[in-house]
Length: 161
Image 1 (cartoon, rainbow, N blue to C red):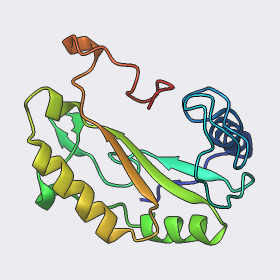
Image 2: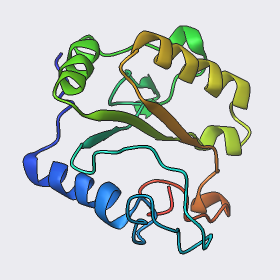
Image 3: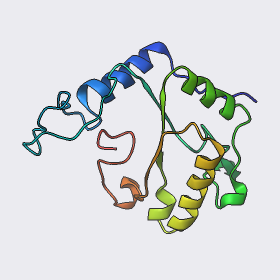
Image 4: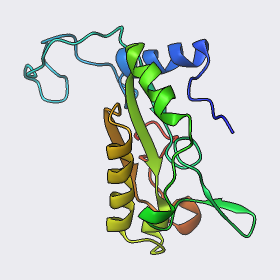
């Protein structure tokens, strides 16, 4: 069963605009080698290419197969349950060859709910990083979610993630 990794052209443009023009948190980025408004001093920045795009990928159900229990999808309970979709490596390699940064963004609320140890989630993420060397970064939030009284603006899809 194949699984698409690329988003449509309009979605790519929106992602590029969000990250490289407005900033990941929704505010303006400091111009190249110019003072940051937050710190009032010049940031030490290397050369960057603001035209380089990024693809943001979810972990469970996008890169790896969800574990289905009682007819509902769940993240893997442990490293042994973790299984990539068969076309993920090829898809990530193609995206990387096209010049994209690859960033995994994942909410792992089971940690916040006490259903999974943080070390287990981190071990799964390490297995993911080892399996897909093209990944540039893995960002994870462990909050339980608003349904559990854990209100936070830093969970995806909120802008502070």
